[in-house]
Amino acid sequence: MTRPLMAGLAALAALAIALPAAAPAQEPAEVTEFTVAGIPVIYKPIRANEVIAVRLYIEGGSANLTPETAGIENFMTVASTRGTDKYTRDEFAALSSATGTAIGATANPDYTFLSLQAVSEHWDQAWDLFAEAAVHPTFPDEEVALVRDQIVNQLKGRLDNPDAYLALLANEQFYAGHPYAVDPLGTVEAVESMTAEDLRARHAERMAKENLLLVVVGNVPREDLERKIEESFGGLPATGGAANPIPPVVASAPKVEVTERELPTNYIRGQFLSPDPGHPDFPAMQVATDILSDRLFEEVRTKRNLSYAVFAGLSQRRANYGLLYVTAVQPDTTLAVMLHEVERLKTEPITEERLAENVNVFLTQYWLAQETNMGQAGTLGVFELVGGGWENAAEFVEGVRRVTPADIQRVARTYMKDFQFVVIGNPSTIDDELFTSL
Image 1 (cartoon, rainbow, N blue to C red):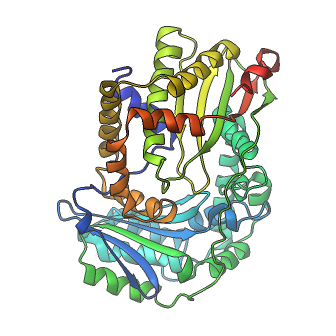
Image 2: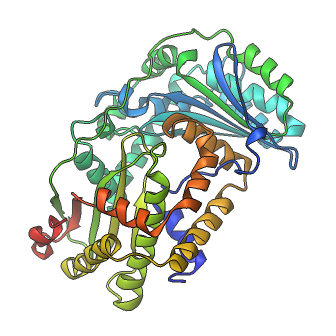
Image 3: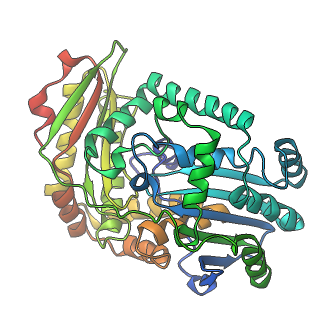
């Protein structure tokens, strides 16, 4: 084993791009798909615990944003619990606390979602809170102002955090001219200009049945679920603000862009085109990236002590990317080692034994991540929206098990090239020719 299992789990958590939890492959018959009130529903009953996890997805993401509206759906969903037709902010918070109900919001380049985690004992009250936030938020001016300040402070904080700023710069470079170039979390300037009326208008435009997907995993009878969906969402308009398509990213020549800052080390991130979760190459690419990350950890950190933080990763978007990441005082020396490992993955077949070891560790991490009902809801939703259908969650696991040494070499040669690097640090330490050599 080239790195401990716990180190692998920590790296995945830090990346925040590991695949969400999946529905177990051996139980595909438990998952059903149906439509209620014109809204598609993916439903998996779980009787082993009393937790119910719900995700309401709004399709569109960055493709439905402009630089002026960047972050508006994140703002909208975060503010949706701050007052509704039925509950004031304090009443909403008090009932949530009393019933152990957790409602959250997340904005993503491909979608935005509201999540609900509840227990069966308080399911009726929890659903009422969730439905109110989703369908009947009032966006009181004073609450919108408070949420706006919180979001703006978070956005400003990203500019002061080298890792967060590095990710922003990498996204802008890699997706220049593409819808993903618009950050779904927004910019300081865009969010500061948004008003409560803007949120109300956005909600009226986008909260239409054609844009929605509900995923429910937990101990709730289907009949009760269908009745609640019909009662809560049946009155929504059928159409409005439809999700725009996501075009592919056009490949470009290797390049490196450096942002000068006086820091103790250099922050480096290189992105490259990769298959999306619905592509037949995605399982092999996931395994190849995991193997590469192990090798980088071993060669850069363990053997040479060139960096404490180094890894390779794979995102999960319709227009997808893989990445290399490292912080290094000696960036040229460090990157030379990393690129050598990329080339070795392309030219030297991995042994069957080593491949089996990597696959076993990866799947162990995968199953650990999907122990919760919310994790399973996350995988079903992601595969439905960006992976060609929720059924592919189980197929992904089988695809990982089928990966061969030849597959690893093939996907490495096909995708691990034309790296788009961004660096925050000292420009005098960067060899442009090295950074653009692959």
